[in-house]
Image (cartoon, rainbow, N blue to C red):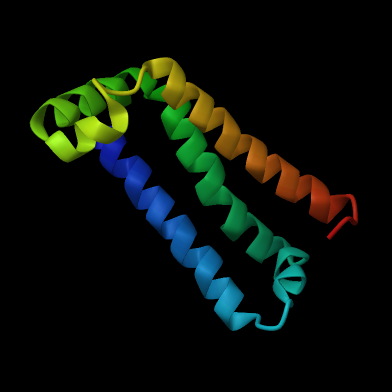
Length: 111
């Protein structure tokens, strides 16, 4: 259960950081923030941490998802009997891949 909470706290922190930077750097100046190493690390770290959490603790996420799907009808409509460990692993890979794409765009000069 700790892995589940850690994932969601990390995800929420990342979302808050991205929204905060978008508000602090209005009018398309998000690129300016991404070109500052400290902001780049702060923005990408939650994505990488959440992705790593899903990869490392995929079995625990699968267990929690199945238990919660059994308890809540509304959730069962969304996830069926629960997501598999492979689904959580793939989501982790996608989150880490997103961080790599952003990093590559910044370092490569595309952004």
